[in-house]
Length: 222
Image (tube, rainbow, N blue to C red; front, side, top):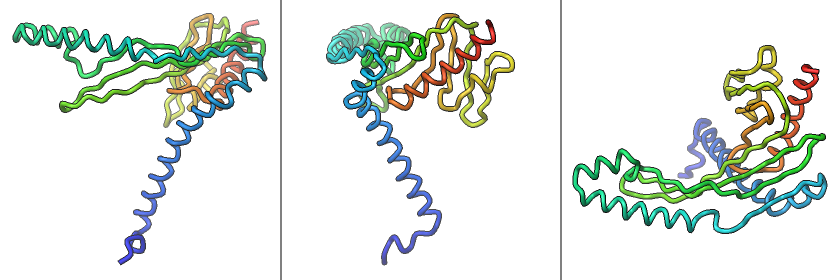
């Protein structure tokens, strides 16, 4: 009997959703790689931006040395018995997650509509232990900072409700965004989280979003 012929609409719906989700994950990874290795240079030349790609091992060698030191410390605490074990859990030596220092992966500096900005992607090596197994991976984080002397505030936008918590009174619609869910002003810069990796669409969309906020709030203060 043909398996596909026996599927009802619920099975087909789940299959389509699964394929769409996997395609979305692949697109996110591929678009970030294309941005870094293909389109970043042309974008920098078009706008006159400066790009820094530090290269290197991303802190892997330093993390390996840190892990060797931690394992030696862990064995030393185990030899001390219950007292050493308690000390190891208290200080995090026996913790489930161990991470290295953050290292720059991509840094972009330049001007957008007359305002200085910096977009950065950083990474660090992590080890997660669970069920007697250890998983080693790389965690990344990207953000965008735009120079704008504005009042201090921090906004978090709900993904489902779209409500902008912490927004200045009457400006919820302006600063809230489901695409850029966390926005912060420290009085000198506007900062927005772009996700784990820098991508062309997110970078240009973030610059447009922050520039619009800076223009509107700046005009309101003048």
